[in-house]
Amino acid sequence: MRLALLALVTAALVAHSAAEASTKVPPLQRLDGAQVELPVSSAPTILLFWRSDCAPCLLELSDLVALRASAPNARVIPVGLQAAAALRPALARLGLRADDTLRTTEDPARLLVRLGGAPPRLPLAVAFRKGGELCGRHTGLLGRDQVRAWAQACGDVHVGR
Image (cartoon, rainbow, N blue to C red; front, side):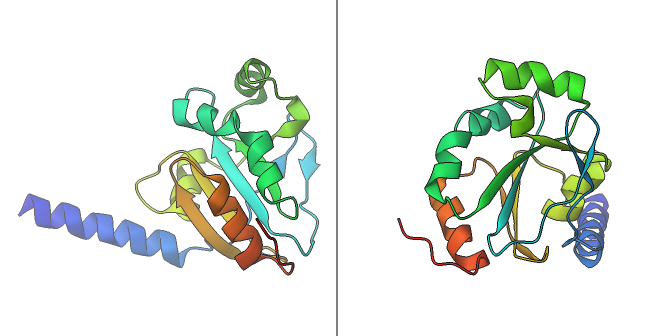
């Protein structure tokens, strides 16, 4: 009985999260606190959500240069889910600059459920088409092949290997 109830509640959460405005790009800011509006472009935008205490997230970020190089017509942007003070040391350890990432002010758990479904999981990558329409989502480590596939499927420009 309890298992059936748990399954119903989980299904309701997933349905509710999918029914929410799941295609909306979250509010973004630079680590210095300045608000950022993602400009509309013909290239897809891929957001990589991460935390400084998430080992798989840090592993994914260590491959940021290669992920970006795998689809030069796409924008690959890490988005931290913590305060800037927690993100900066992790970026420094990875050899990345503060301007290599943005952060969101939306509640992290709610954001992860809204864009990735319940339960909230990291790492989460989402791809948006021109104009901000959700095009794809991936939970777990993101590979270069997935970035290339999103660049082709979500963009206006063909991207080769």
